Image (tube, rainbow, N blue to C red; front, top):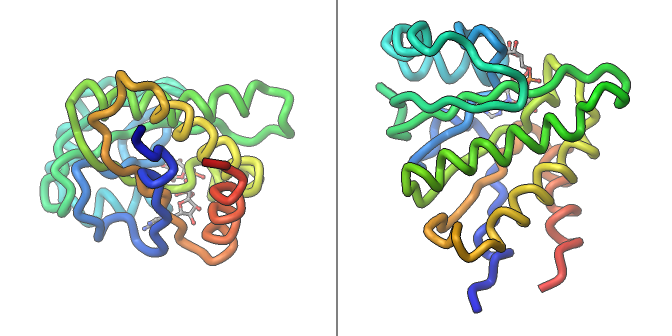
Length: 177
Ligand code: AR6
């Protein structure tokens, strides 16, 4: 049996530099760019990314849409919109899990082998980092355990800072295989 845990990897650094099949953008509902990782991805991909995003008609919180990667090393970008943290009683946990799940559905649909996620919602959107790391690891792990999703070879959890890297390590250690 394949060891699902081995398919999860932590990467510390800038997501725009990674040569995976798709990188994930923590976007806003307009899909027209912003700061943080969204700004970095648009800057690295070049103006054609914004032109394609304009055609998409935005994206609801928890949903995901795919575009080309243009000047990025990654041929695809999957844009997802995380929830804004409002204290935890506004369905934030379910919506954050939906971001990971719906992105992986696109990865599977496009038969992509590798994908890299930033820590969605944990910057400008204020989601507590520890809770967000737990949701990310659990949702990705559960998705990969389904044999129907076996064509996904590796999922990278990208940590931009040391705290996030440590939180991901802690969550991965909790997975017993
Ligand atoms: N590579 C990897 N991770 C990064 C990078 C990078 N280059 N830059 C930042 N991060 P944020 P959100 C990390 O604020 O909280 C935008 O304006 C960052 O340290 O980018 O989902 C959008 O347009 C943090 O851990 O996204 C929305 O309006 C994580 O990425 C809004 O911000 C997410 O931080 C979305 O807010």
